[in-house]
Length: 74
Image 1 (spheres, rainbow, N blue to C red):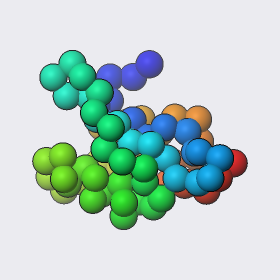
Image 2: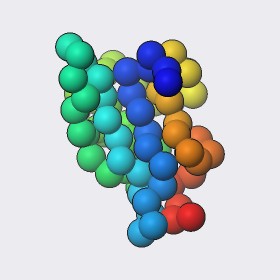
Image 3: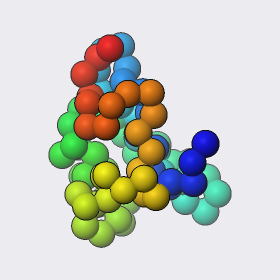
C-alpha cells in the first residue's frame, strides 16, 4: 500500500481505469479515465495544480495492476 493520494486502479474489462483521491482520510471517486487527459481533468477538478506534472511522481500517483498511462482493456 502506498501513501500516494491518487490511485489509478487496474484497467477494467471494458477499458478505462477508476481514479480515486484520498483526502481528509476518505477516498473520493473522481471518475473513470480513458486517457492521461481524462486523468489530468479529474485531478484539476479536485484542485491539484499542474496535474500533468504529478502523473509520474509516485508520491502523488499510484498506478495499480497495470502499466502507467495504459488505459486499454486487459
